Length: 196
Image (cartoon, rainbow, N blue to C red; front, side):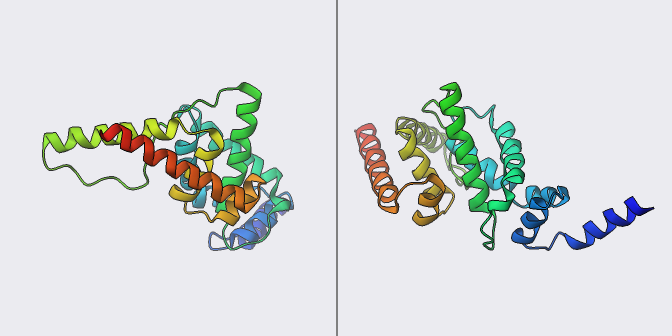
């Protein structure tokens, strides 16, 4: 009877409409129930980030799970902002870095690209041209250095600010903007060479 009452009390304290800060505060206190709500809210954003930033999409689902488990252990360090998405993406970035250092497996390939599907091509020629363009973009991004690629994906496809990226990567904001500028310029040059 007491267990059922305790579970019911936790459920009423962490409803699905609770803020991310309240959910992470409950997780930091040892209640893992709210972690499911956070997962439901943010797992697809984390997954999309990892699809763009990770070299092997076979590892992405494992990394998503690991991100939330690691975030549960680090919940006490959450700064209380409105959304936990930057915090979770930061955890994912750290896991990617750790994996790269530990296993030396971060290769220059992004398996999935783009956040919105392109409109269907009007003709087979358009379809072939679109596939070639996407392959050139994937290839150009894959040739970027790890740090430039991470910054590019975090800013361009995850809509994070330079300040958020700098905080998550532990680098100065100026370094983030320099890497982003260099990544964009390198990408533009690669695409121009491919168009000739």
